[in-house]
Image (cartoon, rainbow, N blue to C red; front, side, top):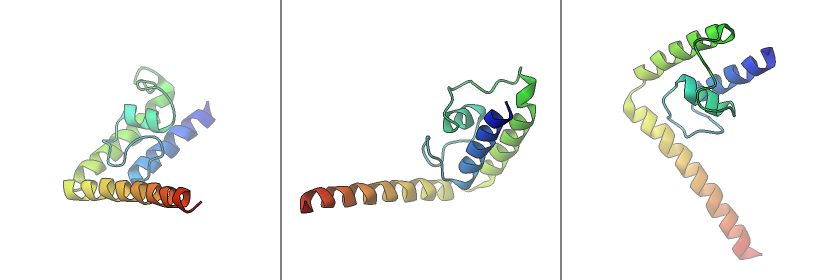
Length: 99
């Protein structure tokens, strides 16, 4: 069980840093977004399960901190992620054309 909780906390940290692997950048931090980022189903983190109590408190704190960030900064993070994705796509396309 602790390994599973570790995955949830790692997913929360990635969301806080704005570097998610499974969800889009700038997504609102919530129980569902943390579950999806951890590779689980939406709704996997339930308040009724006592094992998630500390995780839910950490998610709530992170969500409150996220609300402090200006909207422009969130848009900037999302656009930076989009630019990186497009750059990778361009490099792959150029590689195909060269070969």
